[in-house]
Image 1 (cartoon, rainbow, N blue to C red):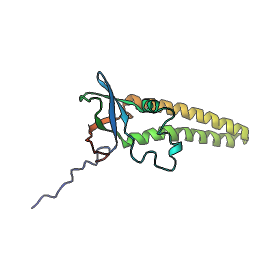
Image 2 (cartoon, helix red, strand yellow; image 1 turned 180 degrees about the horizontal axis):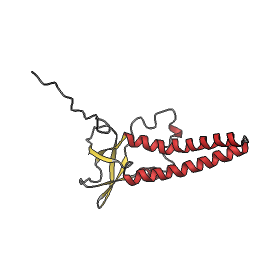
Image 3 (cartoon, rainbow, N blue to C red; image 1 turned 45 degrees about the vertical axis):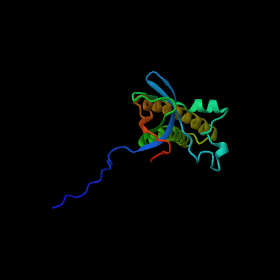
Length: 166
């Protein structure tokens, strides 16, 4: 009896959001990288309002986008590498940044409207709820950073013609 073919895909492993970056500096055991702009970047209808471009000169925009990676594999300046971050980490980060402040704002506003029925009290409570939510989001983001959930991971070196997920 023939054994069934098994897929080599490990569905229990977290999927990664990948991107290509250039090594721009190496300082001891740390490599500094800059994400590569994709060909679609700047080509959409909202390109003029996009935060991905940054404000100011090209040098200041690149400086703002730099990130560090532990260089335990001997990366050199000028290399292209594929880095990734777990998709569930992106979900956690977006929930932390958006859902927590929005939820506290709405809950505080609803409770104030129910309790006081005054628009001024409701707006003040909503402002306080937003402030509380931003503080909680900051704590949550700090916890994600300490655990290393938001840190990019080296996946592989990229060839000259490689693009993401190739």
